[in-house]
Length: 614
Image (tube, rainbow, N blue to C red; front, side, top):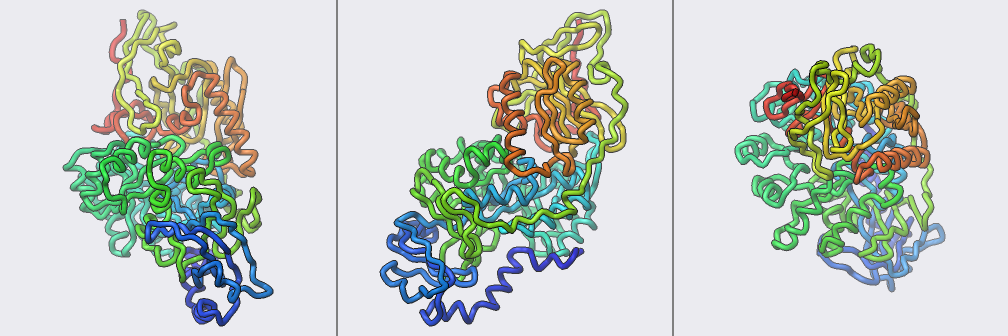
């Protein structure tokens, strides 16, 4: 399945080939017999292997690789007429940062635009599981995404999505499926690094042949298997860890994280735009004096607004330092630790001879202000300016459309929960959301019945949610949600993880209907409506998930949505879009909604949102 000879672009394949080709010259440079391409002079080296800072160091590089670390007093022998010299001026030189688990699609950015922002903030490598675009468009969309991702100066390790659809149960209407055969062919293609997070842990525990077939495919090829286990049940943990899942990013408490470490898994702590379990767990790990050698900091999901306004992995390191972690240890958790886990510490994750020259110059180790970024020996970012220009957009990804085959929605009634004309009040089972936590809960709330319809109750923080099958004009699932704080307006969007049917949510049925009609007109994205008027549009023409526009424009459109959600009453308008998008995700407890209706995740059954009418 090597399309257009792409295997040669995949990291680490190209790096190993280049290293072998360059090795004789690299040895000559190391011995002072050949001049360097690049010398970064007079830096405080963040030694993540030794856990210290070494002063007065110069980093000598040739053909993209580090050849030597020398005293700044002795570096002149490596400098010739064509050597690029960067004067570090006593700044701190850290290895390029690594995000070992991120879904690029949730930033609304295509890989080329995401890469720009990543490099500007010192991130030189990411691992991405594109299960969102695979669920939205199948193999065609997955391969188009991968083709663009591996062409970037940012090192992008793409994973084979393991759960397309996220669950094999009958409680959802997915559009696409990746079979065991598909997964095997993708793993053999040479384009992918590992098997993405295995979210359908119930199928694993129940020994489902399809699930076990995908796991066996990765094990037979010696590939890593990422885990996803939002369950503290020891029996489930024993069964899940025995299959070879080597990491998990779903821990929400210290006990859960320690349990996974004890069971041999690497623990990824999330510091993303919505899921920030690391803020709870990391201080407890520090206070308890626990070993952090198998702990990694990741984002999982990161918004374009956060990327522009607050940064990326530089912000994550800063957050960890502010929580009490030693700055050198914080850097280790985004460099040598993920590199070791990914079996790539011979190439990245540490500033040492033989490794790629991925270097981040920081003005200090607490503020984490990025001054200069070097990737593969090339200056990518310096003093506020992006220096590289080879961010490649592929026409294949640009041209991808969106399946939009929704059933006929004639009016408000098709989005409403009707209970009958003879009642004035209903007791309903709502999806309870807690900001910053992926798990939802069942919450019983009272709503008024108006003209036979169980209506939203904005004053009590109860909104409507409807999910519409977009693939085959199937059903419309309806329910209620509380905890988001939506007291006015409505949103319609084509991002409803992970099957990405159409999701409509709001405090007013009329606004929901208007938003849906506008979303249908623009063919994918997010539409915000209040008082019958469209307030914001974010067009996501690539599979209904990513924009074709530059990150600057996407940022302004996403900022409009954030401001709209603040106007609607959301207490955390930056987190709210992520919580809305996973109202449909049936692999995380406790209750979700799909085109089939309200879903009890534990039993994987459809349940009635109306408990009682009176």
